[in-house]
Length: 166
Image 1: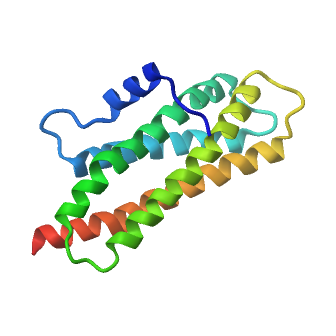
Image 2: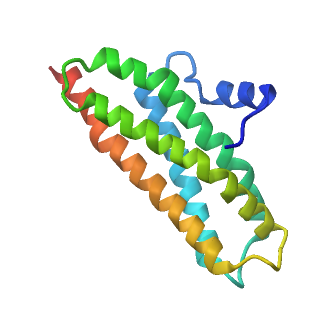
């Protein structure tokens, strides 16, 4: 798994910390919107394979996917999840839900290094790339990310809403 240097970590931590006055849930929804937009871009790249690839879009996606994914994960694990643990008390599924989400974060971060490399090579028109393999990688990532976001919205946010309504 790729580690970030101090400058990169400071940059995405600044970007993915909620601005003053913005709550954790609202900030999560903003991040989800950015992630879903990136998924849409990745799907467009996958659909354009093998002959209609926008090379610039590949390079943009390669540069965006790491900071966006890791920044979202750090926000969730460092800010959101501890807040949820304090807010949602006594929910029998909370611990297993948070554990599942953390495991999915780990899986995503292990995979994005290979995906970044593939996108950069695709952007550079590397003739040794197999378009079917790249398409499979892209689809695997964005389908997994969409599923992860849906789970967070349907389970985690529902738990918070239940407690706030009580």
